[in-house]
Each structure stands twice: as structure tokens, then as C-alpha cells.
Length: 386
Image (cartoon, rainbow, N blue to C red; front, side, top):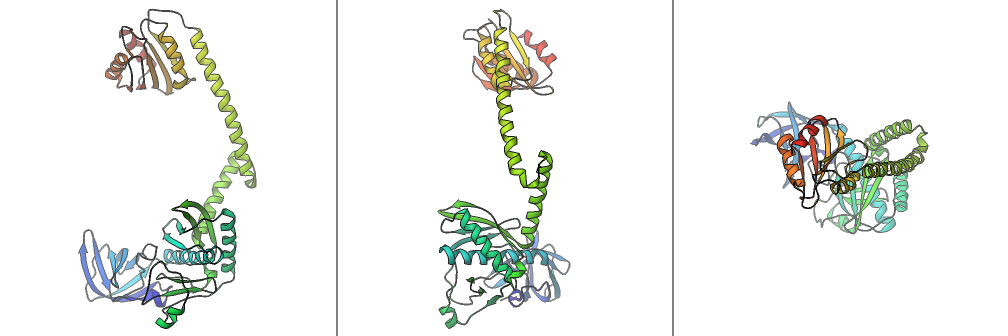
């Protein structure tokens, strides 16, 4: 069994230990110590990282009470090694995990819902509950959770004797019978948990519920606490400031400003659609019966709008109609159209364009749509050869 130093001091950032074993495992080394302050990947959160001597600790796992540190270089068996944890990351996890206990305890107390899933990642914390809450109810939970932070309540972690454990009313996702570690936060939450926690709720700093979705008959809540919540707020504030500058409104008026832009955008889209339709109708009105192919290059209308023109033009020629709509310089979307029984089919033209320019597309004998990379001059010089 590995002695777990994080149980006696969750804020221990460095320690000395003896290397009990070191085995090569693929491109890393599995190191077991007689004791460690590194918390492994369990309890819903990822493992601590840091250093053991000159070796980087990449991951930490526990099995049958033995904690294995996976490093990027070997350590000599029997040697003493100094361990150092990335404590900034560890403390942020402690803030988030303790905050999760507060939120889960409050939701159980006020709404009777159980936490049935918890994941503490590097960028997000998610809590799953076995029932549904409204946004208003979650806002109230957030208010109460942060009041608990302001109250700076003591957080205790202990292994109660069996008789006392049996009398405790505590949260747990598993049926536990021995070596049960209980984390208590005042009268807010009592929960079985193996993870390190802060000493008092004030160290959490802030608890922010970011969003929630309906999930497996309940809800999944996204949250952040402490330093991670502060960074998130800073990033959101920066984006809001950038948007307010772009649309020339106060930061408090960004929502109304964006709404006005969306309305204006909708109006302009309508005007653009009307303009494209007018362009197509002018092209159609200018059609005259001809034996030659009809070739059109159009910059404004777009290929979808010009499909109507291609259908109409195919009836005005005994050859074919080719419409090219500019995407960018020497890049076009195209529509090829030919009437039933025409001497050359749309597929024939598409095949020749593919052979000459590497054009892409598909369709039928009467219509093919696709894309081509070539200049207007080269396309116009080639098409009459078909």
C-alpha cells in the first residue's frame, strides 16, 4: 500500500520518498513509491502532474491501494527522490471539487436531486443530476453556493469509525463499507470522497454555474470555480468588450446592439435576394433563339439563382447552356444545362471540362452542377471546341 500524503495535508506540494519499483512501459516508466502527495486519476478528476527528481510525472493511477507514477525517465530502485507537484493546477482542482460538493449538497437539500455524475476536466466541470431544474432554480443555487463561500465554512476530511459511519447520513454513488473518507462542509454537505479539498470555503473564491442541458432524464450542469472561473470571466469580458467596440455600443448594450445588427442583416439579405432575382430575370429576358451554345459568367447572382436561367436558356439553344458563377479569382461554381434530345448532353460537357481543367461535379444528361479552377478566358476559348 502506498502512503497517501494528500490525505494528511491536501496542500503539500513537495515531499521525499523511496522508489520501490520502476518498470519500463511502452515509452514511459511506471514508478511506485513508498508514499506520495500525487493524487491519482480518480474521484471524477484527472491526476496531478509534476516532477520526481528530474523525471516529469505524466500521469498517476491507483490499483489495489498501489499508486503508480508514470514518468518520462527511469528512477533508481531504492533511491530517495524529491517529489514536486504542479500545485497551481492541484489547487484549482481543489477549488472546483469543493465547489462541486457545495452545489451538489444544496441541490439535494433544496430540491431532492442526487448527483449521479461528476467530471473535473482541465477546461470544464460537469455535474449530472437525476432530475430537472429550471434556470431560475439554478440561479438560486448559485447565490446560496457563493454565500457559503463568503461564510468561509470549515471543510473537514476524516475516516469515521465504523459505528459512527453507520450513523452518518452522507452522499455516495457507491456502496461503501470500509475506509470511507467523509468530507463535511458545515451543514451544507456530507459526502464520501477521496479527493483533496480546500480547508475552508473562502478559498474557493467564486462558484459560477455556466450553463445546463437536459441529459439522460435529468440535467448536466457546467460550472467553474476559483481561479478558473476568474480566467473564464476575464476571457468573456474581453470578448464582450471587443464586440461592443466593433458595433459601437456600450458593453451593457451589446445584446441590443447585436439584435439591431441581426435585424439589419435580415433586411439586407432580403434586398440581396430581390437583386439576385432581378439579375436572373434580366438574363432570361435577353434570351433569343440560337443554334450556338449560351455561355454566361455571373459575379453577383450566385449559382442557385442562376439555375432558373440555365433551365430557361436550355430551351433557347440547340446546343447547351453553361453558367459560371465566380467564387474567387479563377474559381467558379457552374451549371451545365441541355434540353432533352440535344446533340450534346450536360454530362458530355462536364466530362470534357474535367478532362481539360479537372472540373468536379455531377448530375444528369440535362443538368450538371460542379466547380472548376480556370480563368474565364481559358474556359471561353475551350467551350466552343465541344
